[in-house]
Length: 280
Image (tube, rainbow, N blue to C red; front, side, top):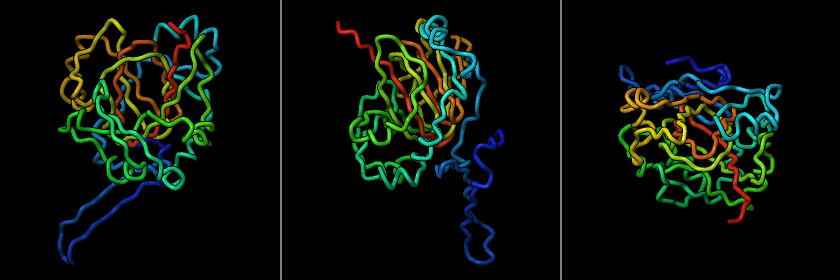
């Protein structure tokens, strides 16, 4: 496994030892690393970062016109060092979020392709009791995580501090979806309209295919199960574009591109979905 990047701040490395009686040689060691007080257990990280097949742009290499002419309807890409959401990352520090938002009710979605089931829980209860590392044996329809279904009015004081990506689509409005999930979680392949997804805390490994290249997957198999059991075979059958998104990176996905996401670490993230304003 790769060394943890320096942005995880080595000083945040925490060792927990639980010893038995004096002279007992058996003990349990719990090793974690943290960012923004969000801890990830090393033993819970089952997947390493992968390659990045996507073009990466900074603010000097991309403009609204270039985005519309060359990228928006054609290919996914990554923005890096384009926005500065340092303040927002501070606001979603774990302790701060629990203190100010832990009493709020959030909607959890089942982690299968079509998110059939929903659950409502207090945010603090989700963080304390439901957000551990994913199990390779647990099915996606049995796994619940927090992403989206946010009450815009209730979360406005937080969301108004988020700096949107500087690119947009004509005749579309932006809709924000906020989420928090544990290592090994993620949604199997699915598609929807275009948008951006920013990783605020943690790393996320993305897998994407063009609309006419449908990858083999089972909607009730987690992305972790698919990656461990099927990925090596499937990537030989269909072109899969990959990229591991680091904190502060923003990935763009065009309309109807298939994509699956695998959270490498405990992750906090915000997506900006483009909703058409055309009335049919």
